Amino acid sequence: MDNQSDFAARQWGRIVETVKTEVAALPLGEKEWMSKMLVRIGEVQQKMHALFASAGGLRLCRSCLGECCGCGKNHLTLANLLTFLLPGEEPPSPDFSRTCPYLGDEGCLFDAARRPYNCVSFLCEPVEGRLSPEERESFYLLERELRSLYLQFDGRYAGSSLRGIFIRAERLSVPFLSRI
Image: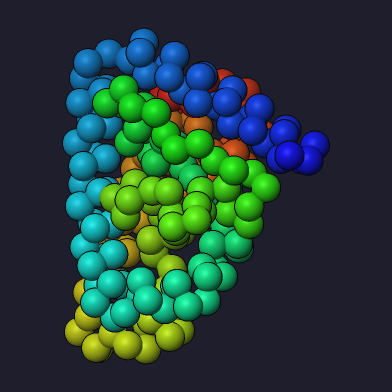
């Protein structure tokens, strides 16, 4: 691992441990709010992924080797991390030497319900072109709902941002789960 990858891995470890500690200290009501929101985010993302898959997206991604994945390697959000930490699970271990640290040999390390917003909401031209007008409209209606859900997290927690938890962590001077 090079110095930059090593630094990113250490930063990731600090972020995960910090958020774990903060989650453990949350009141039950806050955990319930998070759980409800994360379930809805997962449902919407699965519906979007189903539309993507119905357009042959999985095959198309394999054929281009996930070229878009290299463009958004640090989009993992606080909400995405919480889908693992809130139920007491460990998130996948990133490999910061890859174009995207969450891209493994078999594809994305996250199932569709836990992927970052940018990864779920992006449609390349070949995939979008294979959706019917009705499917395209459904996809973008779901995208608007999904953005709204993520923005509710952003408006509630200091460490939340659609730009990603790594980018937010660089500028954060309070705990990730501080209420805004």
